[in-house]
Image (cartoon, rainbow, N blue to C red; front, top):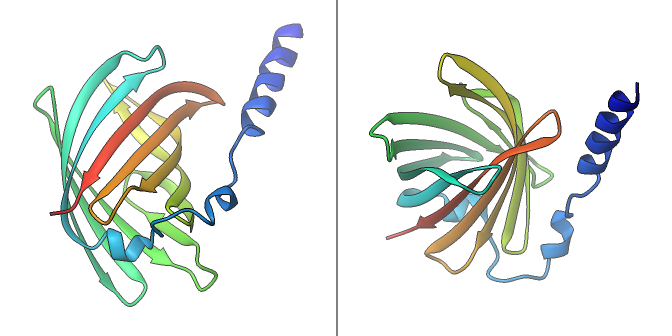
Length: 173
């Protein structure tokens, strides 16, 4: 019973430690998602295990198009082990300024919000590992550095416990 109390306490504490997107309201340059994620660009990243060990590196060719308030973002990944994968997001800007994203390997919807130079969204991604697929929660933050560079940090959790992290640098031509 003590073990169950410890696990529940850890989950509650992990859920309360988030930073509010509102903290970034006055930061510059202002990130307007549909302006930055528009057209072709490249990204480079690393996937780190919870220990901090870099398990894989990757490059991504991105192409985003918008029609009205709906964007289609195609990500073509090339991983350091030679594997390739593609994820196609549909991102819809809501009337209240938030965003909803969907993709075939996203469970439900990704919910996002921007303020100042930051964008934050949360979602659950079906991640294949060997012969099993895990539902992993992503706490995903993006920060616009200038009109060409955006940095991204996503913390991955399962049952409230950190399982890894992804760091990405996006570059526009």
